[in-house]
Image (cartoon, rainbow, N blue to C red):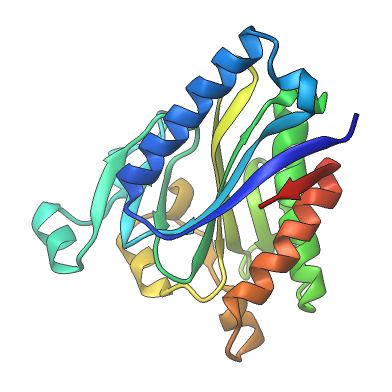
Length: 231
């Protein structure tokens, strides 16, 4: 049976509101699966796209030392800070960034967590390829990187941090499309002190259409995972 995934673009949404929505969708997903409801219609979950107002999030294994400013400075740059229940260290979310939250049943998709993360990375790599940007993975780190083989030039364009509960995923990826990169100066992104960050717009040195990039990324996610998106 063809697997289907429901897609929603939430637009600009408060981080905590989106987090609560993910938690609700994950709980509903697990409850529905326990009742055998998901196999009937081939629905494998949800895919949410959104952007957030300026916010820093740090995962369970992260070090607060990687946040380089204190509360008053956070207020001064109009940013919030959350400790959250995903893997990974600290990252930034803000306008001009495609944040993707897949709430997917990995059992229905017949993939493990490592392959899931690999597929997320692959979809971003293929999206960048469509825009003429060569990217890759970096040994020992999640996410998508440019010039991963040149340490002095290595820079991250997409961060990935996930939580998996009973084979259902939440959290996901943050793809810098036309992000204000100045906000990364206030953290050690993903715990790295020797790696840069970049955006698609910076690499292309031209204005980028967010909707075009979203549409490409949706196609690549659908193709890599082998599901059909329903809106």
